[in-house]
Length: 432
Ligand code: SF4
Image (cartoon, rainbow, N blue to C red; front, side):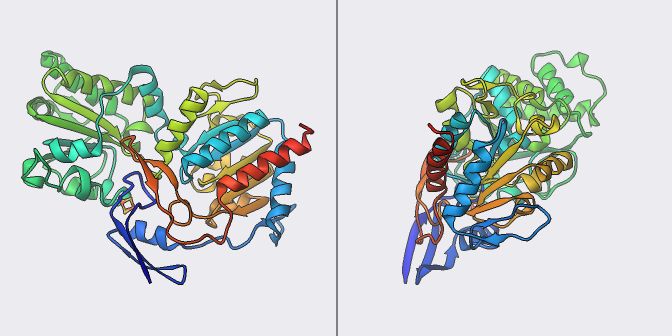
């Protein structure tokens, strides 16, 4: 029996680094410190056992060797004119680098799961920059914490316990008692249940509320009407006063802000609000990133191509224009003639029209788990679980890079090796 301590959890953007794992006969028999979803991920479930192929999406899969599956996948990708390589958020940075190389080789479009969550944040930050900090700074300093359009009680279960609400830090020795928690949302979530101030807003009115707070903070409260987005003016005045009096304020935001009406302009406006708050105090903001290494893909893609997501290599050079080159834009216009979905689940998270389109074209899936994408795949290549069966680099939601540990020996190929073999085979097929 081996006990591995200080391991990292490969599930959400918190990347908790205090996990203990008990290993017996190359099997994980116990997981300590992780939340329920993290522990279930580390133990593994619904694994794909063997590579599989089917010619017709209505027929059953046939189990094949890795060589056969990789050859078939390479034939599909090498024969495509406009391939989409999508997913990447549950893979390590080392695999991201290989994926970008494959996209360049194919002249494909590479996009990641941020396209249906925080890509609008990347767009706004790209244009405007962002005042931010590490989760460690927040734990040690934050006295006012806002959760806007996010529900960490369910999405990031240990976030509030480790970083943002309950922990005692160097300048936050009173823990929860020393922090004012504000939740802004369209419904009373479980996170709202523990807040000091719950601000219930009308669906799609985030931009208006942010603008009203900015007007109050800049001394123009007279232009704010009696009610904005369902929030009374007097409540907005009270919230603005709390923000102004903070010593170290933090705005965590989720898909309630990025994917509601006004999308990236909401983030743009929130960046302005937080920037302006810095004339009164220290205030920062941070996206609540979902998959454990979705932040890492943005980093690798940016240093490799100059852009964080939705990069089109069809002209031979990286081109980026979300709204035109993001995964769902291409599927909506029916441009894609083959797709590889890796370490992400388009079948579960894309709009129905996009999934219908994926069901019509050849799809290669690379993933440890059987999921809705498997149902639209022609070739399925099972991979080892990054951060459990493979070590490598991942980026926490605050942009801090951490080294994921290997806990047990894998029975399946690493996605990095699968990508290496795909690149080599694509080059052979294309005679390069
Ligand atoms: S909060 Fe996230 S990273 Fe931490 S144990 Fe739970 S799932 Fe894993």
